[in-house]
Length: 482
Ligand code: NAD
Image (tube, rainbow, N blue to C red):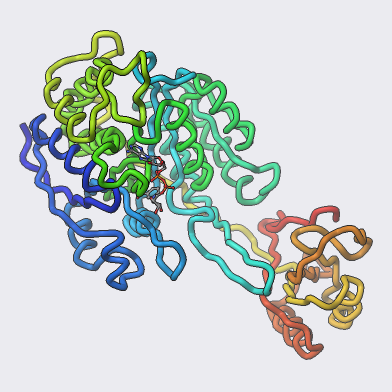
């Protein structure tokens, strides 16, 4: 057996300590060669005034051990508190969130059959948490998607499919609406997919994709998607499979990795001793593979399957006629420990392939320099008095030999010229100025001059967005109804 591996452990909040106790008990009973370094994160740290929920000394442990087994934490609402999960994933570069979901019929009742893995992008998207209020009635959240971030996660999904002998990778996006952000993700999926001819590829719009996932999950194998969609669909898939309490998750980066349950701190059942520890157990199994102790993982996994097969079930999956015993958290852990060395009789026993432990290196293509030309700007105004035509009348005075006012939109819909009186408008206006000579573009000074002139007119300029072309291709979208 290998040397003891230091890991960082956090007991978290709510049911966190209960499920961590149960999980570590099983790991030690199975002979896992681990040496936990315990750090405190979450509620108590937030309450002590640390807005990130994690102290500097905890980062030191994480950077030293590079492996984190973490129970769920409670994120306080509002008040400037930042999600510890999002911060940890981003700070440690854990770009891939891997969430396997498998049904265990007939022992854990599910209306469906599935054996799929959700590979969720973990660092970008709306989870950057860049939000602003710029007018009294309107707030915004910035969705940032990069080529590198998309390529990394999409390559990871294909490499994962090969390593785990999976046949198909499905991409979920909403590129029919978000043409640039989700469009980039879909485009990169198509490009990278060509490098994997043996893997079947498909793309689904997230709405019908989620519906199919809830209705015919057996159609899916590996799903790769953006951060927010991945978060939502993994809860759907886990709940359809039986309970959110069943599934574990690995957050993997080039250097560090974090393993956890997919569910939260479940304040409604905290302290009752009834939480299902399976999600964290499954996260810990992925950790054991990651630290090259697959035999221990295989032993625990088979004992866990046998426990479920024997009808020993926590309350969340307990069903009359299927379950034989309603077990509490620690009782369930003890039942798993009793079955170490045993294999399930009906469910397929697991075998952890040696291939998988080699891991896979994800390389990202260099960004090819493109010709970037400034071809205009969107001037955003806060205005709750004027109607579109009146705003246009004022802004027309900003037109010159270089620039003209192309349109005004409200919440993305063009309202000038030729808007409809029925369209509801907020105080948040976008006024697009475009270069008259599109090839040549404009100088950045034009943007500043435009802002200054609008302010001189008494308009409340809240921000601008520059419009660029890249190698002649437009790097912005038009207004709806333009
Ligand atoms: P939740 O996942 O904690 O609970 C949803 C429902 O599932 C509850 O009814 C709960 O009792 C049940 N449930 C969850 N885990 C269970 C388990 N192991 N066994 C049995 N039943 C279980 O989601 P929530 O209520 O929306 O969030 C509670 C808190 O958790 C929030 O503060 C949220 O921010 C936080 N959260 C943390 C993480 C994390 O740390 N990774 C993830 C999600 C939510």
